[in-house]
Image (cartoon, rainbow, N blue to C red; front, side, top):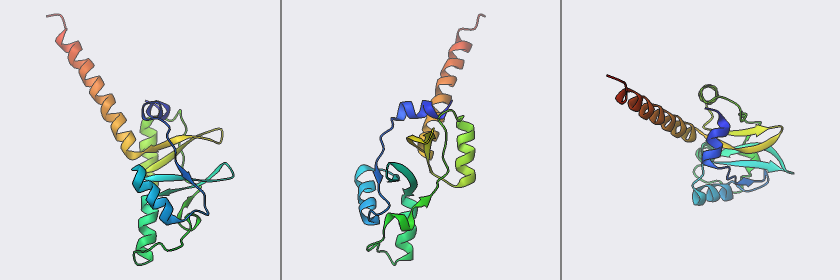
Length: 144
């Protein structure tokens, strides 16, 4: 299974914010939209990613308040990315090694979507369930 197959099933809904945006606005958007990440765009170019992890770290460093913190101050610059043709096992390995829970999927400098660790787990589980059903059907119909 490849990343593009996960994106096809998941969809490529993307929400973004500018680096000059306020972290409080980003947190509000993420909460309202039930998202774990926002892509940070500047002049139609991805310059970073902001996840709930960076927001929590900023809150912890600032005694529970974000004040006027800007996204650029806390975002991950030049995030690890995945390509649409990347195999899921390579994607999982990349996510585990980098510690990233969200990976932008990029092809020819164009953002295609974001894959979360949850998306990967769900896709792998569904693939395994399908294979399991196919094997059980094959065994059940085996000539005696």
